[in-house]
Image (cartoon, rainbow, N blue to C red):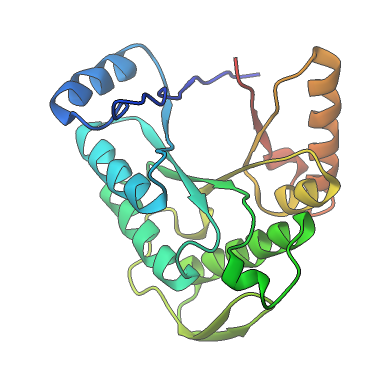
Length: 222
């Protein structure tokens, strides 16, 4: 089984890894030279900052895959699809997407009850729309539980199109169901060898329901 190493920068109170790009350029070179395959971008400032950092990191590296941490609901899927496709083009196909779950905003809660399953249903619909926008050759309309799209279209796709790598995690049945449908990489929770083995089996079982068990890879925090 091949093993690839991903660098996850620490979050420092004084601004963190990415805010001095003269220093960061040196750090990124060291990370590449050390044999890391990819780097996770997950800044406390949120999604828009993550996108800016991802763009700068792609510009300053030649081989690192940039794993962009993202949340459904922060920006509309049509906007996100265009911006992510542009980032993927900028990096020559070196972008991947790490989806995290978080509670719905209060404005959303007024329209529907907030719960774990609702959060994951929104992630599911969001990813369905992103993939459709990255692959369609003509505008389409969509009316779902969370998103309404009219004439959705991304004229300039990324190099990977709808095959951009998606990373998901989770341990509940609802989270695993969505991960089995969409994830190319499943992020395992830390645990004992038996706990990790059981989670791997559950994730593979969820992916098998969509004919994807052979495509699923795993990330384990060390």
